[in-house]
Image (cartoon, rainbow, N blue to C red; front, side, top):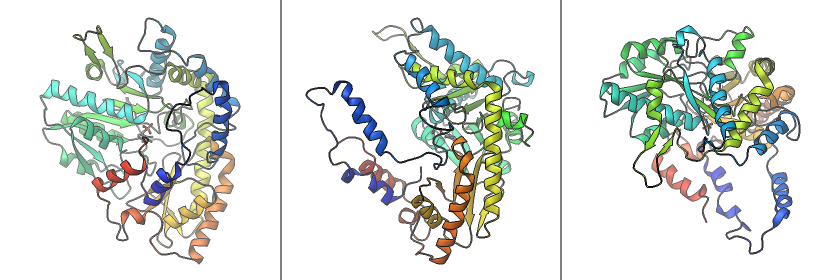
Length: 461
Ligand SMILES: *Cc1c(COP(=O)(O)O)cnc(C)c1O
């Protein structure tokens, strides 16, 4: 999420009048549900107008949505930490991991036939775990104690989080002029402390697939780990390829790939809070686990960051995958790929705008040399759209989901209109992200942003 001061302020404490700070003395009983329905009604209408965010199509009260809700509620009180009690969810987790691995080259001979992994709470946790496991694997294998990792600047912020949490030096390498990971520049950064390089398929900002094959070759040749971020692409690319779209290699069939993250809660159409982390073999994955043998609470083993985990979400992910099946995902992929193509074509027809790079999938980023694209975004927001603002270069993107399939023409019409409005009344360049980036487009100071967070995103009282 990009931070804009006034956006932060609108969620700040001044908006918290009437928020509860203590338990009610007498409980509301079932009456609480009415209160909650009321709160939900007052949330922003996201139907069809949010970039990414909600990936399931149609109406929230029916179809795939209600199927997932039912599956989750059936297993709402289970916890896979207690495998002996909840064998159902233990099996579901193993099957979600296996079915996901099979989509990503796990059944191909080139994969080595040992792909393994876990479900996690989301892409960020999958990435955190892959980075942590790579760090400890490289410590065991190469004796690296001052670890460094190299990421293209288009890689997700989760790697920054991992670097901060796990004391790893982060080297950030600019992308090339096609917005792809710059393999030669990454190669120049590799040294004897390098534990990991990273590629995305596709990257979040511009939806472009990094050159996974070349990065794999580099990683293999240098003896470092290589993580492919398939958080967005994992449940689209295998199907897009099957449908005949030109998709470059991206998975375990590529030599050198050691781990993969893939979000089931995005295009997998599973409930929020579900992702999968996969490893090429147990040798790497074993560094993900924590085992405590000396605790007075007994032997404690846990595979992921959380201890207790929500069995309901695992069951929900399993239900999503089993109910859709290969053909369901194929059909969905065709719809969103076609919607994305129509959106790309429509944007190309707006002379003031240009598309950033060549989108491989369903994320379309665009900018302008004529109008302030952040002002265009502001007008789009006033029309109910929630798009993503990007920087370097200044641009915005839409991550196309099933929600947008019936909305393509509305989107393009609103976009054409917004560009016209901005063109007719160009405001001061201080719109958009300028409040925090400063008029000169200077990067904000990280410590300053951190202070702002404490003020505005604090959930305490
Ligand atoms: C969404 C995303 C992530 C992070 O996933 P969360 O589920 O938000 O934690 C990481 N990488 C890419 C490419 C993503 O799109």
